[in-house]
Length: 405
Image 1 (cartoon, rainbow, N blue to C red):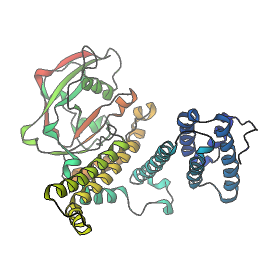
Image 2 (tube, rainbow, N blue to C red):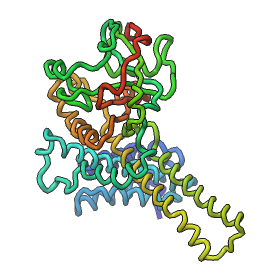
Image 3 (cartoon, rainbow, N blue to C red):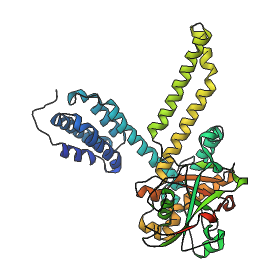
Image 4 (tube, helix red, strand yellow):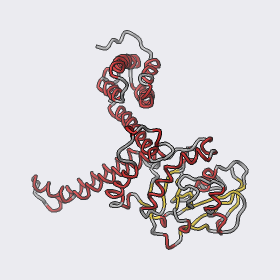
């Protein structure tokens, strides 16, 4: 029986929770934050603090004997969930599952980040041989393309000719077509210009993109504002902005979609569940329309007829879920030091360069990816990088010179 007479302090117990394991601090912080934001307000404070005290004391002894392990966090959550009727009148299962999902996402992204670093020549030597993955991220992507992406292309590719709004900018006042195109390879090498996807010896075209026109201010669209953010403009700089168009012979070229910050994990799963429900509904409707005998054999046959669709849905779910985790793990803004130090920038972007060359080798024409600069502004933006600069051109009639905000 939990002793409810002794008073425990929630903040002290949450602080103890966060400090249980120094090597696994982030999952503990995720759990602590979940308790603060989602559980505390639905609970009897002293009773919740009491069971936290018990969990903390037990966990501390366990860790002292067996060492730090992520399984301690899982067990901690399971105890809180199992004993929730002792401190709350609410059903907390969904809340604790959400906390677990956040921790799983964190662990998955950590693994992806390690994969990302292990293809980077700057970082691979930091890993002892026994810590290297047997299968690197290129091998994983190969399997994903062969088994899923290229089998169900409409779920993973974007035809570049279907993109409605493409914008690009350049500092200064300009008025010719070539002025808004990227610098030549010679200029990039001479000035050590390093971008996210291409090293100086590759010439790629970067564009801010959108499917619809949205205003950001009286003078700028959200897409034009995204250009300024990507260029790191300072207030009062003179900038020329232009709309771009995809050349007609490039309309059907495909870009891989890596912009998964616009959809949540829950939405990806919900889409899968809705598709599943649709299949079940179709089976039942078919039985009603055809007056099928409702016996086990008939139902099995109807389900078998939907097997291909069910297999496709499962593959698409796995593929989109993996790309979502990759998106969350790798698309983070550079800090100010990295952004202004060419060596640090090259180190941060080297894995991107390797992946871009891999995708280009597969016959893919570009990559749609989220704007990390817009993320800093708590706005959503998408970019497109085209491996072939001649796939798109600026529309001179759309040129406008502005003073950056």
